[in-house]
Image (cartoon, rainbow, N blue to C red; front, side):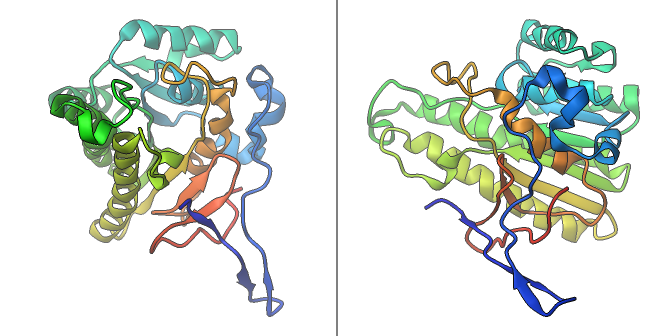
Length: 300
């Protein structure tokens, strides 16, 4: 079952209950080339807060990762682009140019998220070049293999392991490499991109569903553990469902991957005291699932 929306919250000043189901003003569907005029719905101060921020984006060579990295550059951030293929990361820099953003502050740091050694190597380079890290967006993922309509019964173990290694273990290893660099600032902004599959049981997609469900639990658990471990730091680790969009994994979609930009930037730019261990949808909805209650304030 899909995560539920928040129903109401108490308004202490008036002693009444008012609905809080979403963050309004997020712009899912807008021309990314017109970012100067709409800023994807972010107020000027929040857009400006991204300037100079070092944000590591995995899966930055295509889809949501490329879109998010490009608009971070437009906001004046210093995006660190990671992916397995350097040529695709270079294409993302060209995308920045086409949007009228300056790619000169972007760092291209190719790596495979299933390799702890490569991720730690990127972390060392970030520390050497930039000193610390302000945010992490985990977009790297593999799709469901389509070799059989019954993957849980038929899929070879090596294909099972490959999907788990990228979609779950890779996210964990990336977060583990990045967290010390963000804690240099005593603040953590980490956004894990999930999928509605994490709450689904669609036949033929069992393994992909499983990996996204595990990613959801990883996000909530990592948020709770990090906040308990570093109680004096401003920890904001959250999970975002970006929905479906056209990407290397999903060539059949006509939806722009820029639809996930607004909520990603809203989470990355949030001031101290923001959500931690919460679930959101790209249209601004605040979700609750299992024991995790929805965030009861607007993000913007």
